[in-house]
Length: 119
Image 1: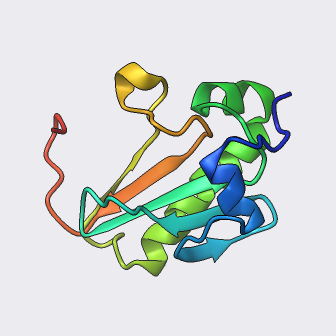
Image 2 (image 1 turned 90 degrees about the horizontal axis):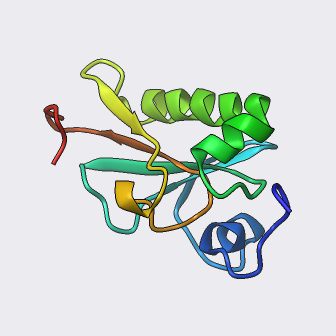
Image 3 (image 1 turned 60 degrees about the vertical axis):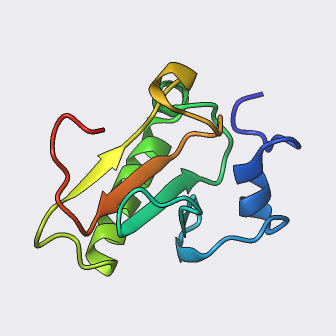
């Protein structure tokens, strides 16, 4: 069921503390932690505590929680001092877009030039 923790989900295990992570921010509804395979000098993931498989499912089922994730992404950027030079917030949805953990999450990337298109 959407929103319920999934026993086989890496990010659900980070939320419960069963898998360690370098947590940079926590709220009642979100957790933000450093990516273990950073793609920029600053690369932080912001996840909802509740399990939704991707950003589209999160937005459809719990738009207020999707807003919490996006708001926290902005707070991470401020904490990491990214706002002056810019940063990127990315939601990959589906394996074809590069999503590898099927728990909705935002990537906050910054600290270097981020040309468009990415890659």
